[in-house]
Image (cartoon, rainbow, N blue to C red; front, top):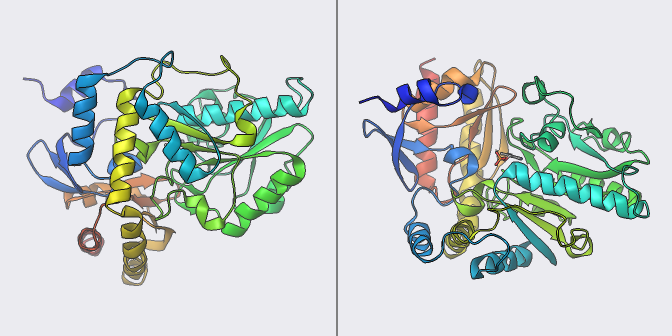
Length: 398
Ligand SMILES: *Cc1c(COP(=O)(O)O)cnc(C)c1O
């Protein structure tokens, strides 16, 4: 019988490179490989499995929904999309929700909202105000809109010409963003904490400054919470710390605990820009995805996972900071907040990610020589301790 990796080598497109190992099952904070070795999963499938693997409530809800109604399209209504939209609006504020299937698709909807907003400001004329400013080192997805919003050679290379109308400001440098605004600008879009870019956080002052700039120039403030949202920082949305009100929010990764979903929240005053027929998707907001999301949000609420993250993260990050003193030749900085932490290394993180996995800890490399630690929100103080112990052990052997 062919091994799984040999099937990948022969038949699966090479865009991800060869897979590093084969995983068979998951339970809580752990995954198990094909030799039944247990790994502590601090990658969470790239910040997706927010409530850990195969949470019984999530499994039960999905099993029931699968047996009841799997797919209907958006030509019809079903209960879970309505209830999920209500939940998101109760969390984010007065507005409307739209559902799709991925982070890139959520951001496409945000970019299309910017175009509609620009048209409205130009008395119905298109192509007058349409430009969007994003941040250096941002990551907003792999579609043509997402790529144009993502000023990184490794994302854009080979796919030019890019969609027109994007410029990029320096993160946490308000003047840099302000200098990019012209009469054609319609929106500013940022991640509250850059994930792929290497755990770079917007300061509260910067977000407040962007809000003011957007108000002064009639621009939409679009916040990409695809990776940092859904409780990862100990607040439901990472931007909440700054006290700002975005005009629209993109969500995806953690929202349905591992079932594919994307979502957009749009503030009430802009929600009417999308009129019937103006946007859509076949799969978006289906019964399975919305049920998985409702189950995920139930668990976050009932198990008080935001408090779990709030209580455990500061002491954990403080202990991680001691890696800098212990291994000054390897570790440069520890940054991030909540359960979204980056270890900035003085060397290529990828071989160390492999060593960590061999020692039983799953982590993810990011831009700027960073190892990302993205534990599920259910991770306990003890799980964090175990991960830190593995880090100390592996780094001491280098
Ligand atoms: C992952 C990610 C995306 C893209 O999401 P996909 O589901 O991979 O399309 C967009 N923005 C941010 C901040 C992300 O982390």
